[in-house]
Structure formats: structure tokens, C-alpha cells
Image (tube, rainbow, N blue to C red; front, side):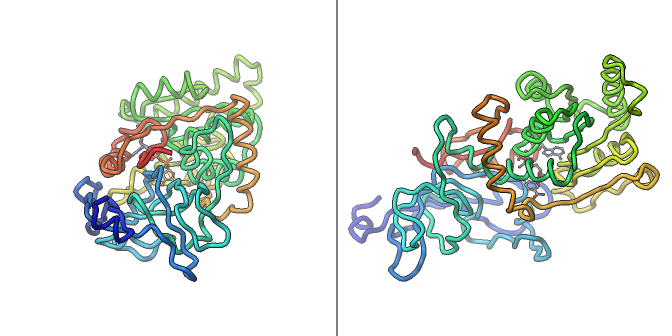
Amino acid sequence: MTTSSSKMGKVENKQVIFKGYTDGSPVETDMELKHGNLIKLEAPKGSNVVVLKNLYLSCDTYMRGRMRDRHDSYIPPFLPGSAIEGYGVAKVVDSDCPDLKSGDIVSGLTNWEEYSLIQNTGQLKKIEQVDGIPLSYHLGLLGMPGFTAYAGFYEACAPKKGDYVFVSAATSAVGQLVGQLAKIYGCYVVGSTGTSQKVELLKNKLGFDEALNYKEESDLEAALARVAAVFFAALVVAGTMWYFPEGIDVYFDNVGGAMLDATIANMRNHGRIALCGILSQNNRNDPQSFRNMFSVISKRITMKGFLQSDFVHLYPRFLEDVTRYYKQGKIVYLEDMNDGLESAPAAFVGLFSGKNVGKQVIRVAKE
Ligand SMILES: NC(=O)c1ccc[n+]([C@@H]2O[C@H](COP(=O)([O-])OP(=O)(O)OC[C@H]3O[C@@H](n4cnc5c(N)ncnc54)[C@H](OP(=O)(O)O)[C@@H]3O)[C@@H](O)[C@H]2O)c1
């Protein structure tokens, strides 16, 4: 804060600015750290706005879609020259909104900057802090990604106890919770991920039954057939091999493309595929097509796309269930925390090469 600016009741507000629309893989130079912007930490009377001090910001892969000049999506593109908008956890510094007061902690859409003036206060959720649960988890385990996992698994996958469940991008913010919820539900769970370190985490920390490194597989279809054979072996051991044919009952798809195609070939009759995201296609201008679509017909597979926002009515139940599971030690959560607003562009870009291990969060300020 400069002397002259503090005299005017303004402080410096560092920002990460979105520079302009882009195709292909995002790079750090699509964003720019900007110094020198000043903000008055006061909510004007009669405005209904709040002023937030941002504590944690979330890096999410869906934000890549907002870097394209496309207006046909469920969310509008970013505005070039403005601070990037994203989910965050923040402290209310000043409020003209009757539902929020100074000192409250909230989560919701904010901007990639130190302080934000938020007009749409209706989307902010007041956080009731729970002992033993870090505030930053409201961007992952107890935030939008966690809720995506919860709604997607219980609603779009229509799971049954004993199902054989496959999850791609299994160490991601969403994937890691899907697998753990499936285990709690009584399913056999296999995940795919992109490094041997993450394979170990899936098996030894997150409790998946099996895991594979898709980057080491030249033939995904054969790799999944091997996974299906693991399922089959488990059934033989359980003495129920005649009861289920070999294959996958439920696929929670975070990646689309070749992995989806290979999984379709390895599904059981009446299998269910929840289409959550298309990580493998996000940065391509020539989306891949499918070879195995006939199996969707012959195996009577249900493929269901979903948006977490369709299931807001489940949010209270989600918070209660997942908080309880976490406190009981039934689930763990991997988080990848970077310090400082200036680390945000590199952390965001890293999502697309698998640099993050777990939910990627930026700590902007100390609580
Ligand atoms: N439908 C909805 O309402 C909804 C809501 C939220 C998120 N989503 C979707 O859910 C998916 C997971 O999101 P998230 O926030 O959990 O992800 P995340 O935590 O940001 O994780 C990204 C991880 O995905 C993997 N990945 C990146 N590029 C990949 C590629 N080309 N092919 C395969 N894997 C790749 C990388 O891990 P590896 O090392 O394993 O490659 C990376 O670490 C995304 O597709 C996202 O768009 C959907």
C-alpha cells in the first residue's frame, strides 16, 4: 500500500489478467500478472455488493473453455483485459449485503486478484468452519469438484453394490472422490492416471483396488481388457465367476477420446457411462471420433452427460455425507497447494500435463 493511496482509502490490488482468446493448449503467457491497480475496500451504500479478501483460488480445467471466444457453452468466455474469474474462498472485508458481514468466510465465484468487489452476492456461500477440515477444501473435497463427484457418481452412474467401476483422471479433484465414494458403496474400483507416483497414490493412499498409467499403454483397449481380467480374477476368488460376465459396469469418464472408446469396448451389457469431462479433447481443434460406438447398441450401454449444477438440491446432503466420511477417516483428499497469486498461471497450465497431484489450489493470503 502506498502512502498516497492509503490516504485515499485505497490499497494496491495485484491481479492475474486474461490477455485474449486462444486455441490449443493454454500457456502462461495467455495470462499476465498486473501490479498497480488500486481498490477501495468499502462496499458503497445501497449497492448490495461485498468486498472480499481472497484467501484461496481454485485452478479448474473447465476454465480452459472460457479462454475460447465461444458463446454456446453453459458458461460465458472470459473478458480479455479483465481479471480471470474462478472459484475461491475469501474473507468478507466490507459488506452492503444484508446476508453477509465483515469477517464472514465465503466460497463462490471471485476473481484472480487480492481483493474483489462482488456484485452477484447470491452465489456466495457462507462457510461454517468445521474443526479438522482446511478452509481450502471448500474448493475441492467440499466444493464444486467434490460435488461433481458426488452428483455424478450417485445420479449419473446409477451404481449398484458390487459394480465394477472404472474412473479416468482418477487422482484429479473429481476423480479421487468418485473412486472413494464407489469403494464406500461396495464397488470394485480401478483408476487410470498419468504417472507411476499417482498409480501408487491411488492404490496405497486412496484405496483403489487397481490402477494403471495410461501414458505407458500403447493399446488402451488391451490395457482395459487386462483390467477387466483383474475384475474377473477377483470374481473367481470370490467364487461368483458364473454370476457376472467379465467387464466394466460403470465408467466415470473425465477424459473422453481414446480412453472412452477403449472403455466402451470393455463394458458389460447394460453398463453405464457418466460423461463428466473431456480432458483429452479440451485443447484440440480436431476432436477424436469413436470406433466402438456399435458396442453402445449391442451392449445396451447408457451414456449420460451431466453438469453438477443440475443437482443443487443434493448439495446439503453432499456436505453432510462427505464431511462425515472425511471426519470418520473413510476418505482422504489430495491437494496441491501453490503459494502466491503469481504462481497461478503456471499452476493452471500444469493441469493439462498432469503436473498437479490432487486438487490444485493457490494460496493468495494467510487466513
Ligand atoms: N460435468 C461437470 O459438471 C463437471 C464439473 C467439474 C469438472 N468437470 C470435469 O471433470 C474432469 C476432472 O476435473 P478436475 O477439476 O477434477 O481435474 P483436475 O483436478 O484439474 O485434474 C487434472 C488432471 O487430469 C489429468 N489430465 C490432464 N490432461 C489430460 C489428458 N489430456 N488426458 C487424460 N488426463 C488428463 C492430469 O492427471 P494425469 O496425471 O492423471 O494425466 C491432471 O492432473 C474435467 O474433465 C472437468 O472438465 C465436470
